[in-house]
Image (cartoon, rainbow, N blue to C red; front, top):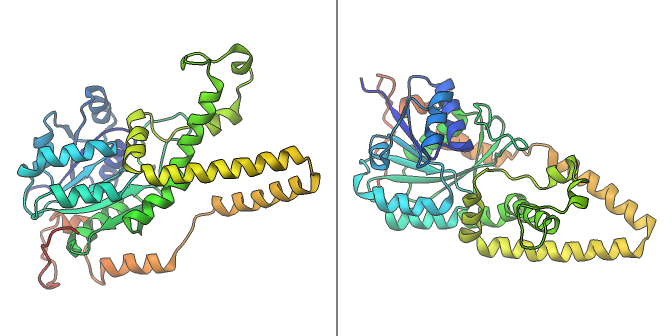
Length: 333
């Protein structure tokens, strides 16, 4: 029996970590990888994140039962355009880009009807400045999923199975709502980091920080100016594919900073106590994992009683799945 194949295009922190997690949990699955950066592909192979590196994008894509696109957002459109004629019937495709509405639109416009697309966005990132892939990156993380109304249930089951296989919790969300929310919880953070770093550098010289400032940079500044990825294109592409939501959140941040400036200038001790005591409470709430019973019930309903896991859906096991009725094969909406 042929082994099931998962191909991962993009072998940075998220893509290589997915490979490590999949191979640790299901070594019987063949994990292929592709990256334009030959060093990234070699490193993923060395770490054991992939079993084989495919230098040819089309080869990597057309062999897969499940295709994972772990690239910056703008690259996804080009991948769809290049590979669409070669994608096998019944293939399921997902991605890990941090914006969803634009990617879902590209999938609907560019992918052939015989494949299914389920958008994904894991809420994960680097640990400080350590961008080394690791198998436990997704443990306990929220993993956003978006699908069209005509997406076959078996395709959604397969991606949910992948998410749970790597230790994450699936969270179904409308693509536009996703983009609005993550513009605040994720995208705003790299824009604030960018603003702080721009303030610190010498005018027009991004590689030089004035000595009097550089000497006083410590752990607090480094934490506040961290980035979740070591690929600048990731953040460029998020600004291009989620520009309205990010711009709106930046405007809200500007208004909030103006309010804070006024409070500081006023010098009222009681107001400052109330501000920081309240924010400490908010920080404690934000630090706790959020559990949504309705979402958990939705995930359980999609899996369905008696539904097989990812191994069965990929055809790893020789047993026959029970008849669940004819599956839909419509286009994404």
